[in-house]
Image 1 (cartoon, rainbow, N blue to C red):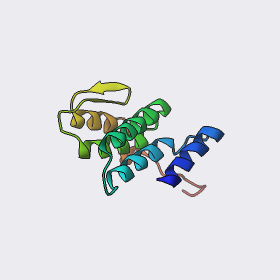
Image 2: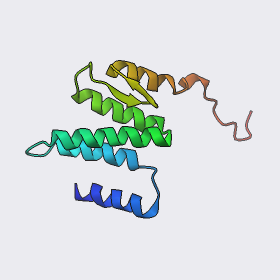
Image 3: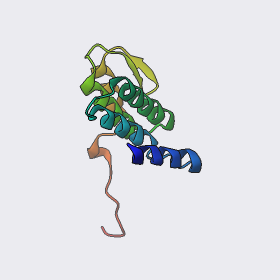
Length: 114
């Protein structure tokens, strides 16, 4: 937990935010694994991860945070993902997945070879 806090302090000091959402998600996961789990603070960290990833338009981090949160919350819980509010976790995850291009549409680099 101390290392996560130090990493988040580093983010705040440097403005290098690439892993910020993932750090919040990891903070939540660790809080749930304590001898006495802190579910309230974990949920705050999960939601902060979702908000951060959404603000950065980091769809992979947002999907990862939504999936982690969904594992711990009832199926009818509502939350924001992808800039929208969803009543059901499954709908939010489907919407986030839909924003990723299918793998078969990505082209391999040519590197000068035919």
